[in-house]
Length: 627
Image (cartoon, rainbow, N blue to C red):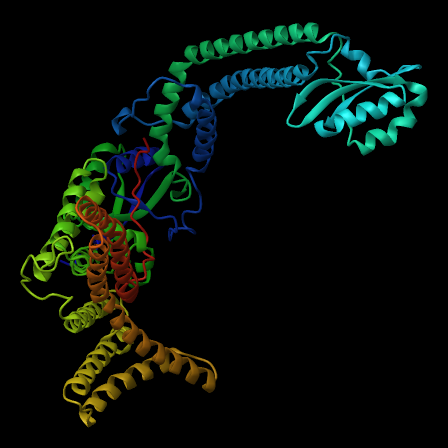
């Protein structure tokens, strides 16, 4: 049930530089090698033969991506057998795309300029609408006359009548030509000699002057016709440039499609700019490959490479375990749950893949918390109906739905009714103490398995002392079992003797001694650190075990919600009763189902995964074609 990641081997490939690109194409087509950049050949092979190639590839790729939005044709993905791409080919394509992009960017600038011009003209059109009722040359509103003063501005509508009266006393004439949102757009005529006399009047009426755009010269009708003409001309020019751009792209479509093809073929070699090392005509490439593919790689390279090469395989050293990528074994049954494991983190190379254990425990816990025949059946059928749209979710939904259905028979619960089906095991409603006891036992068993996996992971990773003496090792396991036995004796037999005390003290002493040897610093500091870590371990085990009480708590909560629904329904008759029961069950399925799913995930992550793997593994990312 518990699978270790695929066994890896370190591959070191030595070849002549002329074969380097063909080797990367072959390996990319196989998709089996995770490149290793930190090569040990820094002194003997100090050069990076692929660096110049990668720089040209990067430039070409950047220019192609700028042109990609203009390409409507579909792209074909090449195969490794289509051949290598030489540096000179990339340089030639880069020059051609540089020239093409210069023309395209010039047309883009023209389109941008025309677009800005159209937007500016439309803004002027919107402004002109306010002056449409004025039958005069708007340019005169900007000029200051010697005798006649014309002012344009806005004033709140509620102040307009009072302002009109006040201005008439001073010999000024005011007229509204546009109203909007409680504001009056007005024009004021009067003597330039008496302008200062009305300044305070305008200010008290909250008058705000308007600036007449410099483009407004002539009557509103003439200006509108001129603006419409300019907008039409700019639109025509934009469409003409767009047609020119389309013709330019069509004329160069073969070049663009060929560039796309060459970029894909060149990508594997270019991506290894810092991984391929060399000196003279000799180059080397290192990486991690699945152990079962070693001979296949040798055979394929022998078929593809023109010159002799040397390839070495070696098992990873313990000092390299942290850098070895993790390739999880495919398990179709637990595939959807494997993705939830990856959400927490990637197991280290020597650590167990907990997907199978996670799937089994998650399915069981969901059923324990959400045990109901009807609710489980609806979850399973609903998930099955969504299998095409959400295939991963559907697999998880069907499995937890069936688990809920089975526990529904065990609890004797059908759509919240507890008296229709006879329970095959127990009814949490009638025996809550028993449900809580079983939840604690389940939690203790879960933590026990997690501790055993942690011991196995430490041994496999070379941390033997920690696996024996550490708090999550054999000593910690013995302490947890001793504590469980002591609690049993104390609660059931009401006794705690010297044997129970000795069983607790011995593994605790081993853990304290190991923690003391692992710490450093002054005596008081080491003592404080050891005491805190020991106390933390004890509290963590107690709280972790008690966390599983929520398994029983949610099974009781499920019953309590159903009881609340029936209590409300009991206040109604006939149709109202039925509608309340149906809506209440829908509410329970959606709301409590989501909460239970999250709580199960929390128990898996924080009470399980955090105890036996860090999630800091590196995912296996093989060299491959990017289509």
